[in-house]
Image (tube, rainbow, N blue to C red; front, side, top):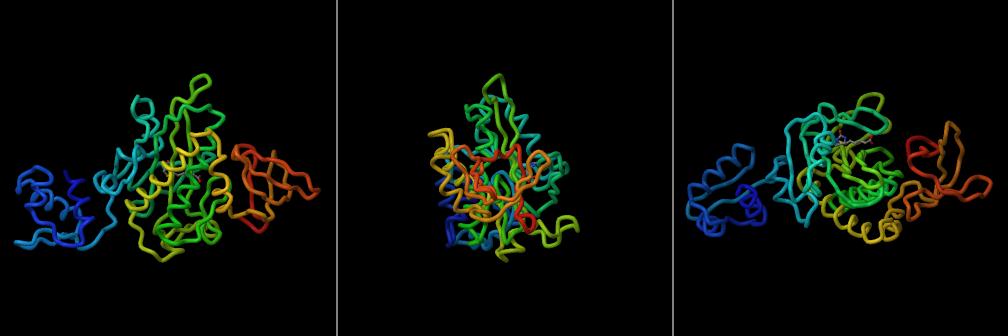
Length: 326
Ligand code: BTN
C-alpha cells in the first residue's frame, strides 16, 4: 500500500483527501494515517491539512523498494525490486536470484556496496547515498556467445536515460562505459551462468556515480559524476526507473533478431570515438586506427593506418583515445 500511496502523492500536485485514498485503496483512514507517518519518518515532506488532505511538498532522494517500484513504468524490468541499505555486491545477490525460476526482470538495488565489483577483477567503490548501484537479472534464452551484446544494450539505455533526464552530453565509450565531458560516470559488469550451450541466467550490474564531487588521485583524470558535470539534482529512483524503461524497450528490439541490427544506428550516434583516432591494445600490441562504429554483432569496426578495415571484439581488445581515457 505504501507504494500505491507514494504513486498517488507524486502524481498529484494538489492535496489528496484521506477519503479519496481510503476509497481508492479500499483501506481504513487509520491505515492511511499510519503509512503517512511512516513516510514522514523516512524523510518525505508531507503536509497534512484538515479537510484538504495530504500533499507531497518535495521529492527527496530516498531509496527503498516502494520508492523505486512506485516510479517504475515497465512491463517486466524492475517491476519487482529487491532493495538493501547495504550489501556486499548487487551482482553477487542477483546471481543467487538467477538460480530461481521466475527471476527474469528482478532488479537488485543497494544504497551502499561494501564489495562492489568492477571489470577485470577490480573493486568498484560504492559509498552510501552517492550512486546508483543496481543489477538486473535476465533469462534471455540466447546463446552464451551473444551475451556481450546485452551489455551494449544496457550501455545505450543508460546513456539515453541520462540524456533525456538531465540534458547531459552523455556518450558511450565502446563497449560499455558511459562518459560525460570525457570522463567516466558509469560502468557495467555483466556476468552469466551457462549450461552447455545456453544461458541459465545473466546479471547486468550497473554502477553510476551520482553526486561524488572529489575522486581519489588515481581516478581524478578519468572519473566523474552526473551532478558534478551537469549540476542537476538527481533523484536516484527516477533515474533507475528511466533506465529500466529504456532498457526494456531496447532489449525487446534486440530480442527480435538476437543481434544489434535494430539498435546499432542509435548506438553509433552516442559513440564518443566515432570517426576519431583510437589506440587498439590487442594481445599486448598497440596500434592506431579510426573507429567507424559498431556492427550488428557489437564488434567495433576500425580502419587501420594502412587502410585495412576490420572488426575488433570487446573481450580481446582495449580501446583508448589517442590523448587518454576516451
Ligand atoms: C566497470 O568496471 O566499469 C564495471 C563496474 C560495475 C559496477 C556495478 S555497481 C552495481 C553492480 N554490482 C557490482 O558489484 N558491480 C556492479
